[in-house]
Length: 244
Image (cartoon, rainbow, N blue to C red):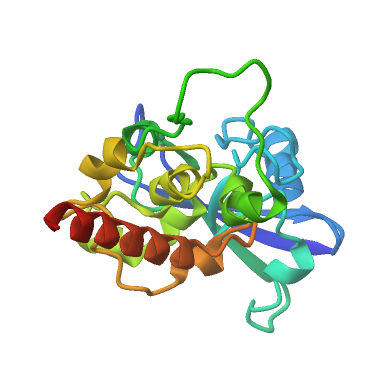
C-alpha cells in the first residue's frame, strides 16, 4: 500500500525555522512507522535525521510525535497510524519531533535536559548498609512494589506528552519521578532524604495535575500517574515525621 509521510524537518545549517516535507512510500499495513522512515531515508532523502537502534521497543531511542501523539516509531504499525487518517485517496501519517526538548535536527531532539533531570533524582540504590557477601534479596511482594517502574526505558514519551511541561518548563517531569519511585519504594533503599531536594520542591512532584497523558503515552504501559501520586504520598509522610 502507499502512504504519505508528512515529516517536520529542520536543519540548523540551512533553515531559519521548521518546515514540512512529504514523501509517498510503499509499505505493508503490518510495517511500522520506523520502516516507513527508513524507506524515506534510503530511497528518497538520505539527509533525514532521526534516532533508532534496536527496533523492538526496548532501547526507547525512536520516540517521536506520530499523528499528534507521543509514541515509539518501532512499535506503531502503519495500519494503526492511518486509522485516524481522513478517508481520501492516500492516507497521511504526520511525524514530528518530541515536545519539550530542543530540536537539534529533523526528528532528533537534545536529550541533555532530560537526562539532567534523570540524574538529579539519584537513580541508583542508596543501600541500608555496606555491601553484603551475597546479593541483597527481596521477597516477591517487595519486588512487586517496584516492578512497574523498572519497565521504564527512558524513551521520553511521557515527557513529550506532559501538558504541565508546556506551562512550567522547570517541572521535574514524569520520567525522572518514575526513576525516583523505582528506588524510593525499593525495600533495599534508604535514599528518600537524599532525593527530597529535587522531588519535594515547587517544581518537583507537586506540579503534576493528574492529566494522565504520561500514562497514556507510555509504550511500556507503566502507570506513571499512579507512581507520581505514590511518591507525593511518601513525601507527605516524610514531612509529617519530620514535624513530630
